[in-house]
Length: 327
Image (cartoon, rainbow, N blue to C red):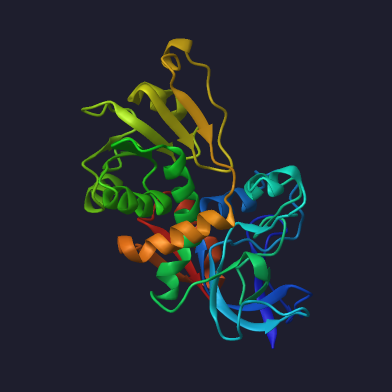
């Protein structure tokens, strides 16, 4: 058996084949069934993240089957369907890990960034960071939940319990979290690139009570706003859209520089927060919520070898929902 992976040496991704690796202690070998394409994968391929080892296999929204286990055993069984997300390993020893904040670990590993990811037919994972998924849902539709869903969930929790939530950038993450917000009884306001009527129609289809360009004003002030678009200029815009005491949550791992803005826009106890990675507790909470909400993901499937086309479509904003690679 051989592994086929798409490797980033530079850009674009290059196919490469080698013998199937053996799982080490505490690891599992996963046969990949589907891998979502995340905006963070664009940052990896475009070389926008720091200290990135090369070559690297991107991909961190992985659904697959355990086909081998390393020494020491595992709570996962052979043949079990599992998911692997962005946080691939934490040290469990630093002050952050000991305090339950493994998302801020001093020595983390990230799937598809600092350890090989799921743009492949097979991958190795730390068994502690592979989530049992059960059998509900098609692989391609489950894959986006492993990052777009998980990071979106953490961002929604950090946004607080306000009734009116603004989502800037209505793609893979926003279309999932909009469903959660509606289930919680909140109103969703969707902001897209100005003039992107297709994205605005998609947002309304997913339950948004209002959809417009990021240069427009909502009929009511927002309690909180979540920025999924990695555009720093949206931070001042979101601050102006939230009420006194409102929160602006930046959900991306990478963002362009935030321009200067008057202090008056931040005053009255408005807050700017960032989401850094996620914890296994986030995953447990969100994955337990998925069947209750009845989340439906909109996906566009691509064969694994067409990963560069999927990334180009994501970069150009040609997708509604999420792109998913199928080996």
